[in-house]
Length: 251
Image (cartoon, rainbow, N blue to C red; front, side, top):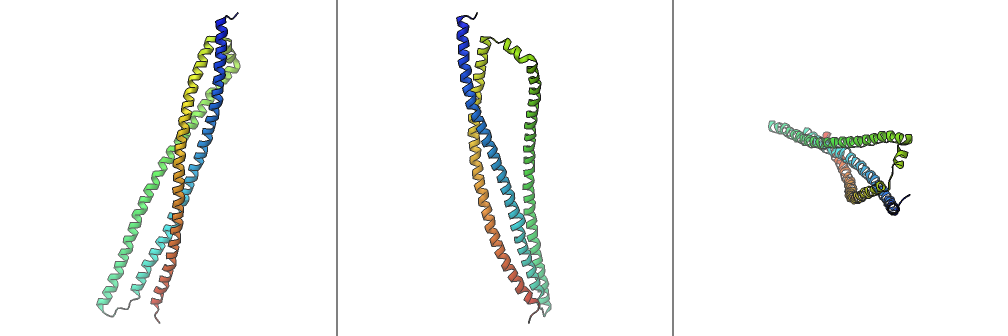
């Protein structure tokens, strides 16, 4: 028959267990909320990456291509204008050839500068790939850890079904339960502290992501405005080409 001390210990354990149960419930809500917020945060980050890809395509394959075509057409118009000259003396002929060479050199220098900038762009873009690969490796390692955990739990669950869990309960004592309650409390306090830190960190990341999102959207607007300016230049280039074409056949 249980003595008074054992009964007091059982009552103390029961109270401690109920308090831990309350902490667990509150912690579950916090951890679940943090998980949901992090998943939404990851979705926002993914959306930013998509927006960056859109800006890259719009700026590089769009604006840049049109702008380069504009400059190339202007160089070609210059060469055509030089070709349409009608030199009468050897000095004028030499000028025509010399000036044509000058424009061609200008064009080659311009293309060399474009190649240098393109090389820098390629180098910067390449830097992104190892970072993405490192993230993929991190995800793979996290997935493997979950798989290993599941394997261990499957074996342990089988042992519990086979009687290990009942054996643990049969061997339980008030003192052992008290140690378990204390151990659970210690672990819960650590988890609560960790959960608070995680929530604070996710809030900081969210703030940075929101700032990045604003910058990306602003950049997209700037790219669109540049597109309008480049297209306006295109109209002027076409007008310049028409005037140059008139020089080929003079009335």
